[in-house]
Amino acid sequence: MSEQNHPINILSQNELLLQAEVKALTGQLVELEQSVSTFESALRSQLADELIEVQELTILYKEQKQTKKEKRLAQKQRGKNYQPPVALKVVPEKIPNKSSDANEKERKRLYREAMLYVHPDKFNMNEEQSDLATEVTTKLIEIYKSGDLGLLEDYHAHIFSGNAMLKFVGKPKELQKKSSNSEYLKREKERLLNEIELIKARYTYKVLTSYPNPMTFVKELKAYYLDRINKLKRRTRTK
Image (cartoon, rainbow, N blue to C red):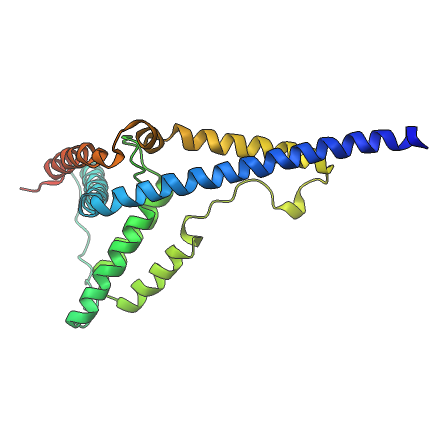
């Protein structure tokens, strides 16, 4: 009887050990996420104007590039025997009623909050930006410029619900193959270790753990973003 129970006891001990490791790693991950997130929020609050201007200029630059591309294509299509099409009547968009001062102030508040929340730049000195975040911020700018406070409130709520930045990763739990508890714990341990390594690889984590006063990093970031703003202004300047 004892021989039959022995493997079960060994498995139980292994599971308890894995559970303890998973619990410890979960606590470590939460602590790291909180400290890095708090630090990045503090940085964003100091660089709000620069971050928003960079994103607006970046989107403008992409729009101008697309416009130039379309013009070049149109020139190629015309050729010698090109006959311009009959001009279509342009129906002007309805101009929204001017908002009151209070509404305008609220629009600016919602816009800034949402823009900083989904801003694709993660302070890692990397020029590449998330396509998803750029898509969301582009939509945000369009809604803000439309002057529709109600629509902006709805999109602001959508962004802060977390749904705007969701990405489908892997299969839903109900579709995953069933496996033993120990196998699940092993996978969970591996996942937590990977997430911890990703956080530690972030530039802000390195600053937070290596700078005597991490907030002095703001000066470096401000110089970096001002340089980007100047470059983008030159690229988007029109004659």
